[in-house]
Length: 88
Image (cartoon, rainbow, N blue to C red; front, side):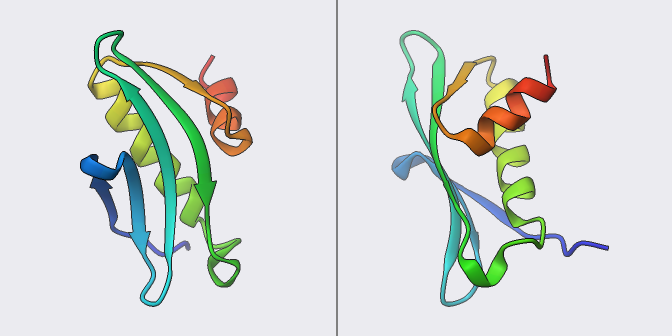
């Protein structure tokens, strides 16, 4: 069973993070509020936390928030693109 992590949304930095103590995992985005469009461009998980479901929980929370805001979503981040391709 995978550990449940606390995902924090840092709106002012346009990113979602999981605080892992000395390190952070994150997914970053750019928001165009006029077009109601959100673009994910970077996901990072420290080597020590990889393979533990951190990125999955992080991206899932970020996409859930974007969808709840009714934003159109795009991504140049290959990890986020995997999630977007599954939801089609």
